[in-house]
Image 1 (cartoon, rainbow, N blue to C red):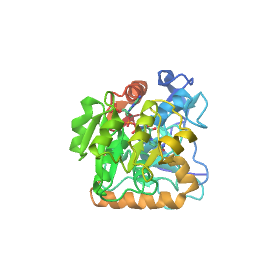
Image 2 (tube, protein in one colour; image 1 turned 60 degrees about the vertical axis):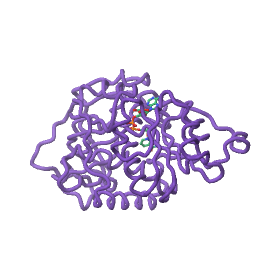
Image 3 (cartoon, protein in one colour; image 1 turned 135 degrees about the horizontal axis):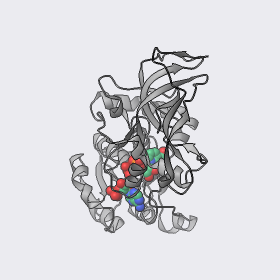
Image 4 (cartoon, rainbow, N blue to C red; image 1 turned 90 degrees about the vertical axis):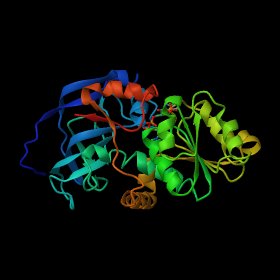
Length: 336
Ligand SMILES: NC(=O)c1ccc[n+]([C@@H]2O[C@H](COP(=O)([O-])OP(=O)(O)OC[C@H]3O[C@@H](n4cnc5c(N)ncnc54)[C@H](OP(=O)(O)O)[C@@H]3O)[C@@H](O)[C@H]2O)c1
């Protein structure tokens, strides 16, 4: 049983369906996807915007651990208007606007867990809240509870012009850190405007040597490592010996290995894995603290409404291809 608004809910909808694990080029627009029904503790939202995240690319390529099997409706981050309420849901009414994480966000409707749905901040358009439940908590968790950043420390932030990286730069500066950012050359001005102290080329430079030079040979206290591939080794080499932390949250540049030999004889540093979904599930108290701290940062104006680059739902494959090709700056959104 669920209550509905006056707006009638159709039986089928437009959605992007991933049909293989060969990447986002096999994302197809379908027009007859069944509109899901909210179960106990869930709400149905009419999606007004879906956030594009790098994990959509991992899922489409089959590298996301425990990810969905095709055919599946793609997209994990949706914002919109609550249109139906599942059994036992309290505190959310039809008509309220919320953002959350679930399955099948690249669609006209999706189901969210009511407990995990976050109200769109007052005065913000729905799409301006994109980032609030994925990118921003990830950046904050990497910086604070996991990375332990404090004022005066140096933080190396990769992909600093991206959806997650931009928030990380703003927050790291707010906490009083010196920020060394990496980005493709065409994105450096964006990163400087966010307050980064130094911006280095993510494509050409010897990143580790440059960080060591900028820190007088000491290395960075904290590295937000979201790139992987050859960059992982540069990140390990750029971290301060003994006390430096490298928070590993992504592998846009591919998988890379760390050996016990390296940790004993080459990179005597702390390596910390981060997956925001796992953190939410296994450390709800830490996640709650992160979300509480985020509210404070929003109230203080450290983080403000996002201005995502928008694409029509049908152009989802193009949006994901551009993200994968490193051609984007900031957050991307699909409008159904
Ligand atoms: N673990 C988690 O829970 C979690 C949650 C959110 C995000 N993340 C991770 O954070 C990272 C950023 O995610 P996002 O969604 O905000 O994406 P994004 O930063 O907006 O886009 C990815 C950026 O990564 C950089 N990059 C460097 N090497 C790359 C390569 N070989 N291939 C592709 N991109 C490369 C590119 O920036 P430049 O060209 O400027 O270098 C690119 O624009 C991803 O690795 C993602 O997996 C993890």
